[in-house]
Length: 250
Image (cartoon, rainbow, N blue to C red):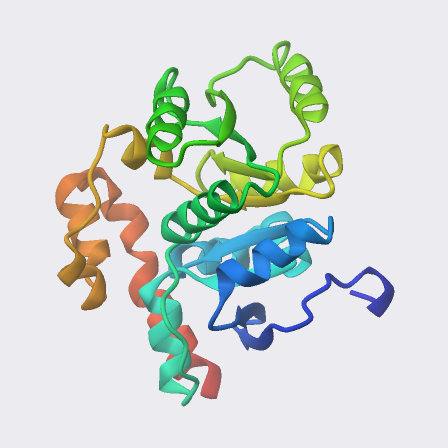
């Protein structure tokens, strides 16, 4: 990528893992709020091991990650792999960062508009209602992730007219990253972030792993227990561990 088209990452510490960017700051919410205040917007990637391995075989996903303004260490595998190299960063789950940003903007009255896109019909709306109760002042529009191709243009028009400060997309990897890359220009001053299954959590449809499991880097095991169908996807974890820690040295 040439310098002119490189994403703006000032105040972030850049690292590289498997050829992908990983950024770090102790104050992610402050960095994002500052982007909102300045009308700069940002594309945020929540990088984990599974996404990194998909990017190795999916050039458009890889390009979306490289072009993002911030690639945060969402997954334990990313944190552990960097730690293996002596780089100390803290895991920053996208669901927690997104909620912290919404809470702070609502508290400060700074452009408290958000748009939720993704999930089963009704889930994004339930998540929006739950967060509006939790953080009064938020104005959230939402749309489920099962629109037909003929319905998408109207949704994009609605999003563009709404001009939220935050756009959260829960379509799963790689759909959400590719959708953000294709539609970021609709609201260039907004913070855009892929949030996976966060709407399900906020809506109460699913639960997160207990805090102790997250702290012990075992949230993946809880997800596998709750959703056994994920086992094929989990095969990416040992492959990532090899490539990110040992494989890169040969």
